[in-house]
Image (tube, rainbow, N blue to C red; front, side):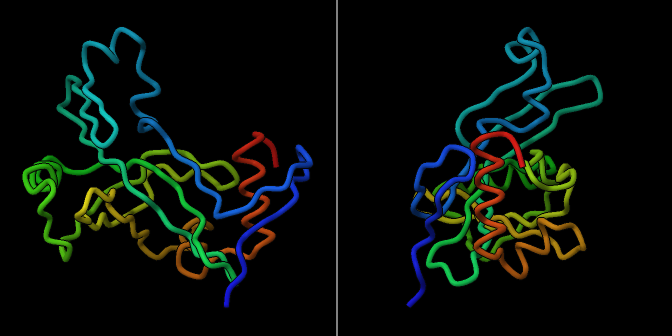
Length: 171
């Protein structure tokens, strides 16, 4: 039986138990808009985002990236956003609640995660899920450390270091 992930934080000294989970309320592209442009050019809710600009429209979906923790019961979870093509976005939203869970939509990673080299535009596949669950994110294999962690998992020490940086903003 695998152990429950727990650690004493080297930053705050508190004991943290359970799988680390961090999320973003918006794609980086939305966060970089001015307040005026957020109101006039963008539409966002908890799951979807569209941003209008002179070159066209950018489409985003909120997803879940699960990184296995070696020896742990639960994965390290990231709630992140991906950029989708108009066609994929329209198919995804038109089948809301009744997805074909064998579908897969190519996307580009749309948040910067702490601890890792730049994660913007990592290649991904979005796998829709039913029952109100956010889509599952698959990272395409590469030598990027996030992709390596997705493919092979995190050690307990790596999970603790990443969680501490995400919680306290330092490594």
